[in-house]
Every structure is written in C-alpha cells, then in structure tokens.
Image (cartoon, rainbow, N blue to C red; front, side):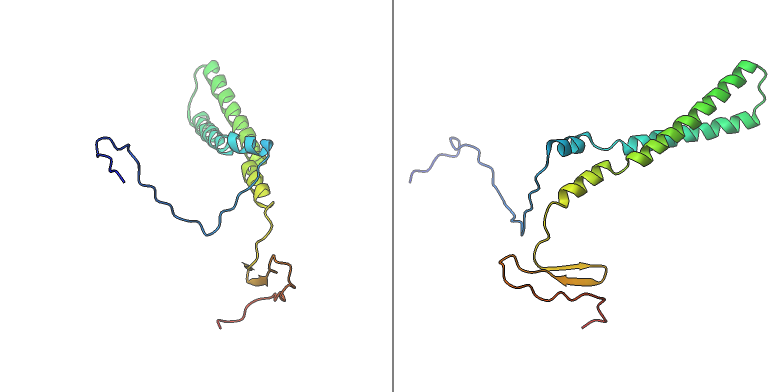
Length: 149
C-alpha cells in the first residue's frame, strides 16, 4: 500500500455514530406536513390578545382618572379603549379555538403506530402485550400494584 503525503490527502472528517436502540419512522400525508410546516398561530393570537387587553386596561384607567377638556380627545380614548377590548377578546377566542392544531396533527401521526410488544404501564395498571410472532398471548394482569416486591 502506498501512503499519501499529508499535503495531498483530502480532508476526511472523523465520523462517529451512536446507535439507536430503536428508530421509529412515521408516514406523514401532505396536509399533515403542511400543518406542521405552517406551525401554530396560537402563540401569536395569545400574545397580541394579552397586549391589547393590557392596553385596554391602561386606557380604562386613564379614562377614569383623567379630566378631558376637549370632547374629541375623550372620544378618541373611548374608541381606542373599545377597540382594544373587542380586539383582545376576539383574539383570545381565536386562540382558544385554534390552540392545539399542531398538537392534534402530531397526535394523529403518532397514533398510527401500533403498540409494540413488551410491558406497558399507565396509571398503576400493568399489561403484558403478546409477542408479534403469532404465539399465544400471555395473561394480562390488570389492577393496581400492591406495595414493592
């Protein structure tokens, strides 16, 4: 074998790989991918709603404590206060209706995967799932565990 001089050797990075015990691959439809790409408008709705409601409260405090000499100034403050309250509550309702759209999409994708064999525990209940090889299933004990064994 001939050795390549260090100045003629191409740059080859060191590659280190850590193995996964299990890698799960999910299939995703186009509409689900678009939902995930678009993201959730929830946080924007909530942030703007909170800002508008804070402005509305401060304008209300101004209306209660200030003496307006001009009717036009008072009218502008009343209109700004009303618009802030209405906009804040509308955005709060939009946030409440649309929250979790990305979460529901991800949940739908995850629910396509059948449960794997092994022991599944949830809320103190233990179930033994049958192996995937087609043999007879083991009994499924249910109920609460008593004490530590």
